[in-house]
Amino acid sequence: MEEVAKYILNEKDLISKIEIIYFLAPKLGINFDKSIVFKTEIARMFLKYTQIKVDNNLVLTACLLCNCKKVDDAQKIGRLKTYAKEGAEHLAKLGFDEKFCRICEGVNRYSGLKPRENESDILELIDNFGGMLIDRPERIALNPDEAMVLIEYRNLKSEYNKYLETFRDFVNCMEKVEIHGAVNTTAFARLQKLMRESKSITEFVKKIDLEYSPSVDEKIDKLRGIKAKERERANRALFTAESEEKILKHINEND
Image (cartoon, rainbow, N blue to C red; front, top):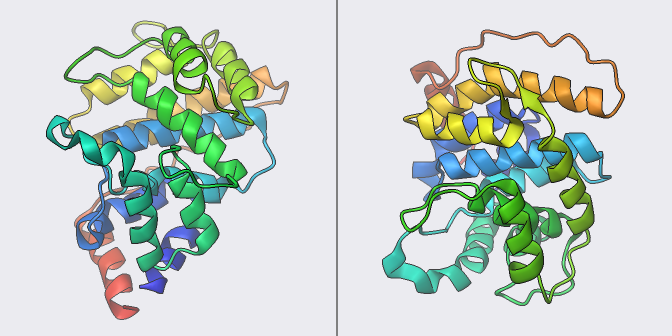
């Protein structure tokens, strides 16, 4: 199964990586839903805005896989404290190395893993923040300000997170960014809207790729004082029967 880890990590294009994981998820026995894509896009924006010196590909891959054993079921609330460790153990069986699995296990602090990897602190912030911006059966989505207050004064009140201040600055700046459309909205509000309106993972990913990311990236470049580059909007075929066949064939041939 070592080939699985190499195949996923070696794909540097985030959208193509999502496509690979989407088609492999049933075969690999991992959880993969719209909430994971939602959080990963926030992580991508954070890394682009802050230019933190980490391996972006490693962080984004971990963001896509760290919740691979999470069960969104109120009847299985006990799994909340074990899913990160179970997920890390499962990823190790798929061929991911020890550091990658430690990063994923550190998405929360229930396993007591020490020392923590720097990348785990990024995952922790993204998982907390992104999760609060998503509608749940028991509550509607919070706004970014409410989410940050809960992260700082409840979830991480007694914990040190290396990137908390940097993340707070990122959230504050992105809340001032306006994405133009039929109705102008902030960056996070637009992402929330796209997730609510998308009936499937595939629809959500396509909207992010063609509509959302290009607009947000242009705004981030301006915030950072960088002249925005013209981005080619490739009309690539995503989530087709042909791409699924190609991905599964690659894995089966190297299994």
